[in-house]
Length: 210
Image 1: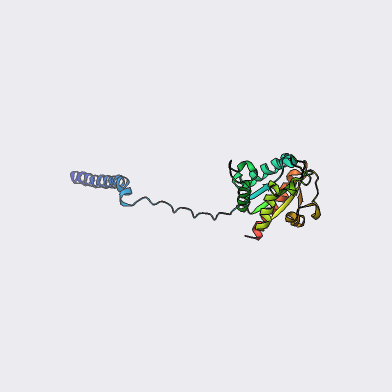
Image 2: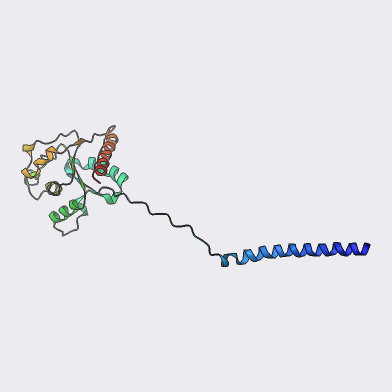
């Protein structure tokens, strides 16, 4: 009887050992060949977000009149919209190009023009002593005329405490400018508040007209 019992225990032990080995071998095989049986599934790519087109802004100004103020305005707008969205200087016009056509094309690629008006904007004179605005080749005049001809928004920015010029003080082609709603851009401590107000106005305009 003792020998029979011992044989039974040995038999049971062998069976248990075989089962354990089978389980271990199954796990090893599953780990080795599981990837080949079932391909690695990648999560679906996220849906692209709908791009919101930022306004493209042309800044018209006279360096002799408002270069410093315009530089600060430009920096704030670039910070908010990015450098590609702002066209400021005629330095961007290639050498040898017809500046009249280049300016007209640049304004045409924008959907808003900011006309920076300082204390000398109206009375600025050329080398001959003639008022620049009376010259049909004047850069500022060409820029604003082009924007009005294309009927894009023109926002006068009044800097250095300047006021809006009178209708009769402007060439006939620019007289409609006096009816465009202007915004003063004051020096510190009000500068950033005024620029924030300008940005909100620009974004509201494009939101309502998108």
